[in-house]
Amino acid sequence: MDKTVAITGASRGLGSAVARAFGAEGAHLVLSARDTEALDHVAADVLEAGGSVTTLRADVRDEFDVERFCEEASRESDGGIDVLVANAGVYHGDVGQTRLADESYSAFDDHLRTNVRGVYATIREAVPHLAPEARVLVPSGQIAREAKAGLGSYAVSKAGAEALVRQFATELEHPVGVVDPGQVSTDLTDNGPGRDPEDVAKMFVWAASEAPVADLDGAVIDLRAWKSATR
Image (tube, rainbow, N blue to C red):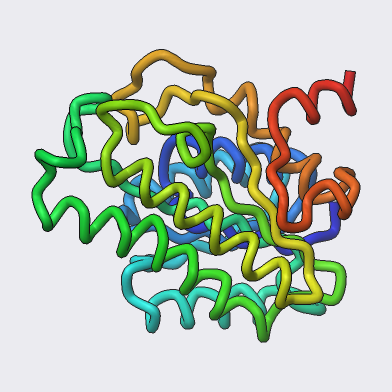
């Protein structure tokens, strides 16, 4: 895969698994996260998998960090960023125990600042650097569309991220879509029940290269669509 793939929140969980999956395809990865030590470990995995990699510390809550990240990703490519995965996210509190009426304002604010504004900043700053055939992917889950008690402002933030996808899709020439791998067990969710991130990471490679644009742009590609297309 002769592509430059930029991924935020790549130091652990789904982001690191997706980075390794693209690395196994021979892509050049440009990875960002706040934890540089963990990011270095992921970079080593990408190299071992057969890809090439550049890492950069960036906090998606800071648009200047994001701007620098996107500029670096563009410099690392021949014709711009081919795939952007706006993956960085946070969950404050015990998973399933964060009732909206009981949450602190600080938790609410940071969920939106990271999971919504961070996605916005990532896509916005990447736009000038996207390759002509680039695709933009935003991980999300069913909780964004079907409310479940105890997930509070995290669920609100995921719904906001999906609204951003729809709006960007109507305004950009590049396809922008949601990738929903189902429930995944990561540090973000205290390693609770769910699929291993490594088991669904290739879904993002498929969404970035083979999924029909009409099915991706402004829409949600789920696990069933991926399995149906690749079995």
